[in-house]
Amino acid sequence: MKPCPFCAEEILDAAVKCRYCGEFLINPPKKETVPWCFKNSFVIFSCFTFGPFALPLVWFHPRYSLLKKLVITGMMVALTFFLGAAAINSFKTISAYYQQMTQQGLF
Image 1 (tube, rainbow, N blue to C red):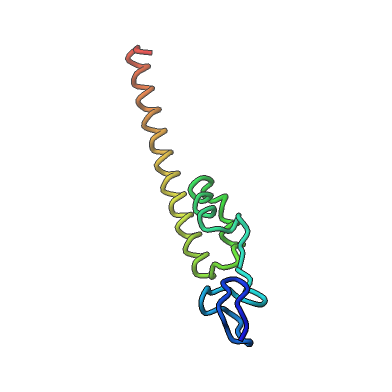
Image 2 (image 1 turned 90 degrees about the horizontal axis):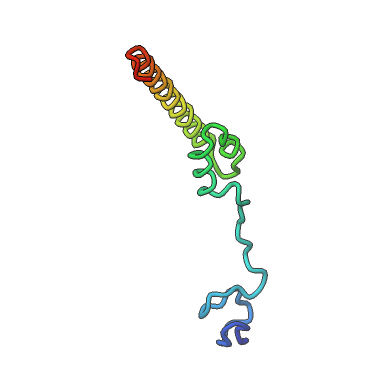
């Protein structure tokens, strides 16, 4: 029996982890770290901010499966298409309204 270096409780000599405080005694397991540019919050923020220009973040993400990458890309392409069509339609409507106002002599 030996004392735990963290909580001073008696533990077995062969113990790797203290059963009282939960600390690893030798070679603690390394936590898998992901670079800041591959964190889910940054990828989502980039997709909403930059649209399809953020797709390389999705495709180079080490933890996303191929299916997840394809689904995100499909959703991004569809959303970009619909928002682009809505923007073109709104520009046409504003242009028609402006032409009508200039014909009536209000501008």
